[in-house]
Length: 125
Image (cartoon, rainbow, N blue to C red; front, side, top):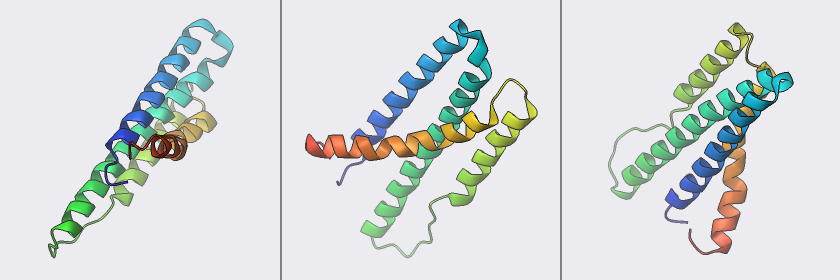
């Protein structure tokens, strides 16, 4: 598991397909518009957080590999602030479901587990 790029790409693709399907559902099914928009907003923010964490992990591993005496962090404060911002946006607008937005924040991180298992079985990681 030296290279995380295939897993990041798989999770990104799956999340974008889910977002596209939710937007199609938003167009055709009027009754669930708040849920589909909330889930789409949460998926977008969760994907941004997932990719930001992957970038920070790369930086940390590069710093550890070069034995530099530089301080580093995984950007937890930035990621939690972004999640709070998206949640506040969902609360302020009545077009977004709060529960669906919060659920969408966690989906990309949860998709990383089956994507990692699948790729490790195919020996791509």
